[in-house]
Amino acid sequence: MTDQHSNPTDGRQPNLPPGQRAITAFPRFGLPTFSWAMPRDVQTLYLRIGGDVARDFIVDEQLRGLERVEQRADFHCVTGWSSLGHVWSGFRFRDFYRLIVQPAVFPQTIDAIVVFTGRDGYRAALPLVDLLADNVMLADHLDGERLGMAHGGALRLVAPAHYGYKNVKHLEAVECWNNPRRHRFPLPYPGLMEHPRARVAYEERGRHFPAWVFRWLYRPLITPTIVLFRITMRRARARAQRH
Ligand SMILES: Nc1nc2c(c(=O)[nH]1)N[C@H]1C(S)=C(S)[C@@H](COP(=O)(O)O)O[C@H]1N2
Ligand SMILES: [Mo]
Image 1 (tube, rainbow, N blue to C red):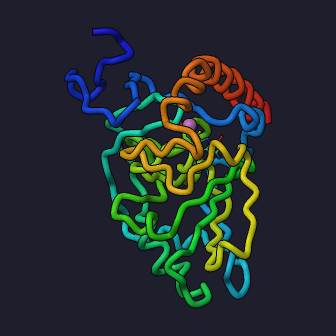
Image 2: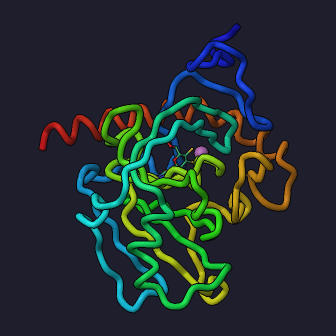
């Protein structure tokens, strides 16, 4: 069995979603443009809440009051790699939404959209209905350790049913838009690469083209991107140590 196909959790061939290959590592990954925008603060727990709210506000300590939950989940990047069996700890998005966001949001509509912004400027959006699923988390721990520079500290979105590009790291802001058609969300990648739901099980990799086209386009980018992020993360760590 090659390294690429081994399952780090139990050694059996995993039952992977369509078009995915398991890798044993969990590399830092993302859009190359953001590899140079490593956020300075990956430790302070806070979020700005905005969108269709009376006024933007910041939550910090209130987050710690939410019930702590843990789940084991696989991670699937839209480019085709999967990293299996990770344990996330943090807070249920649903609890965060119901207890902190909802009281401040103007009357909800069923097609509300939530836009997440990272401290590196990265953005992604998901329909509220998808985010209320039981397994969607705001995580602050991965495999027993606090999230840091590598995987999205202080807080990241974990939505295992959706491709990695919806799992925004280093969360800075959460905006809830009731009437998404009235707003435009500038996303950091071309519209073609965006799928409003990006569900792994249905291979919703992008729009207008069949999934195999995206697989074929993305596959050659995996290794160079992993190498790039390894380099930029090493630099960011060295910089953080100097200061
Ligand atoms: N803030 C931020 N979040 C991000 C990205 C990014 O570049 N910046 N990249 C996305 C993509 S494409 C993937 S596959 C995952 C990778 O998560 P990891 O670095 O923990 O492996 O983060 C997603 N969330
Ligand atoms: Mo990704």
